[in-house]
Image 1: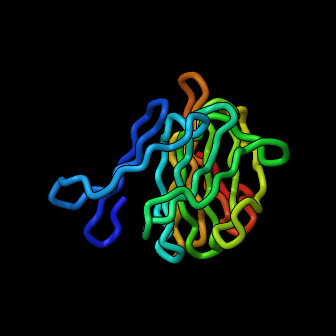
Image 2: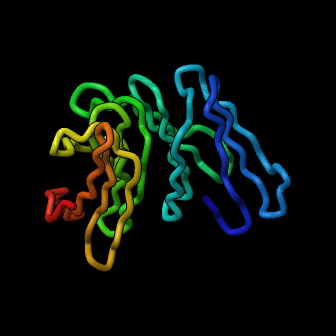
Length: 171
């Protein structure tokens, strides 16, 4: 993900390391996350708050918010209880309704978190017994979220309303 002249990368390791690099390939800054914040898998840049959201492929999954200005962990949310989610495998920012949506690899779930009130969110199950959520895209013009899921050799594309995450169409 790019921010002006920067690109962000993360290691899928324990502990995870986040890199801010210049577009010319030089490491500008690094941040080593805490032990329980391992296996960084997704990175989302929220330009409006100058933060980077790091989703982990762990149990429970965690979302770590990194403040870009000083490249430090601002806060973290373990996805447990009502927002239970394991192994984040996909993520997207919905800039219209100001949410980040995270998909699970094992559970066929989506968690939608408020970008303005970090920690406030809701969990949604992906129907048709689809287990792996492996891609999420937002079309702010049509007001849709597209989720690509799979179970075994079967794949499904679900089109959902951004405001309610109700399924409009599946293919």
